[in-house]
Amino acid sequence: MLVLILLVCSLPITIALFGFLLWKFPPKTPKVFYGYRSKRSVLSIQAWNYANARAAHMMLRGSWIHFAIMLLIVLIYRFGSEISDPIQMANSVAFYPLIILTVQILFLYRKLEGELTCGFDAKGRPIKCRSPKALEQSKQN
Image 1: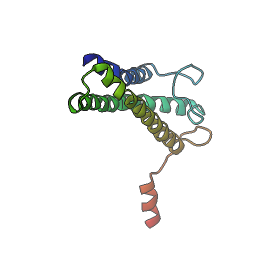
Image 2: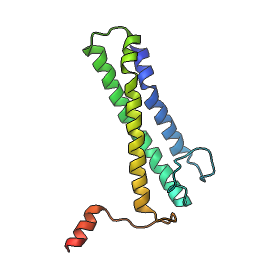
Image 3: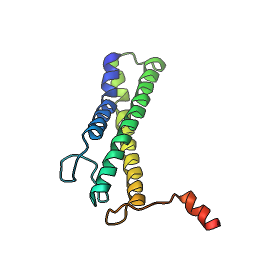
Image 4: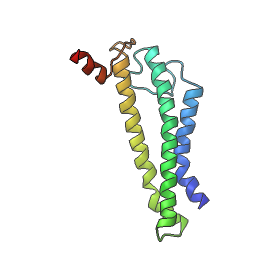
């Protein structure tokens, strides 16, 4: 059972490790080989620093959620199914970490690109962004 938990939860632990390293040792410039790299994040050093700080934070938070979901899935399979062999159980739950990882990456990309679009102009300069609720309230007034 312990081997199954280690196998299934190794992916969220790895994501947490990369998030921690990105948080503790942020890349100084977009020219390094690691960091959150997109069209918007490399426009300026301010956008680059913001994107990497947020990516590290989101990776750490997401890895804890990923870890909790995977432990729950393992416990459900362990006590709620007829499968007793750990290898067979690992084969049954092997695709769940990949599905969760895909959702996590898509969420991180969409959320972070939205924040970069809202917080930085086309040249990477910081701007003040107003939330949709604030825009609706200003239209009503």
